[in-house]
Image (cartoon, rainbow, N blue to C red; front, side, top):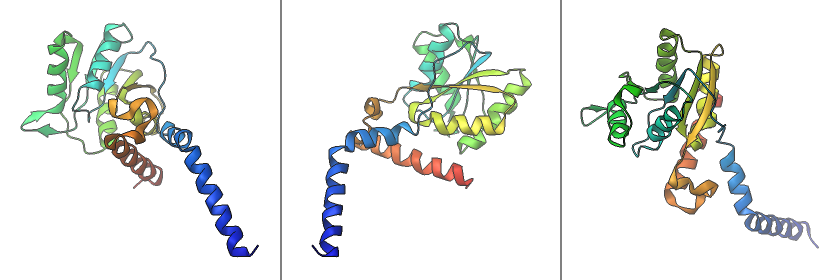
Length: 196
């Protein structure tokens, strides 16, 4: 057998193995984006911006209702059609039966997880908060946790993931929206590691 045929055979075998084990490989790649832990008793729940479907705010409200923290700080990403995201998220939760006084919507603009974390951390320190449950979408928990711990090593952050139906319980590659979520978060994770 020539060297070229050996390489071709090796490549075909590698492709076959990758195809045969594509589900576990892709699921494993997706799990690298997740650092979701069980909720713990905390001083406050923080719900990160960036979820227009309400999964994050509902998970944060649920944790407060279950007694894990007395209040929910609702972060703000920006304004849509003249309305602050934090106010719309709070209104959404109130419409679903949660008391308005459970929520603390904040109004700063942020364009990245780092900018948002800077605002959240400043607010937490003003309020004397030390132990925090941070709620974000499941596939965002690892990067968000790294950002918050890096910017405020003196505070305790516990990441809790909100469901994303497009993630398909870890089979993110099945639908287009899941593939988009994985790709965007993977790129942002690499950018965060490189600090760009």
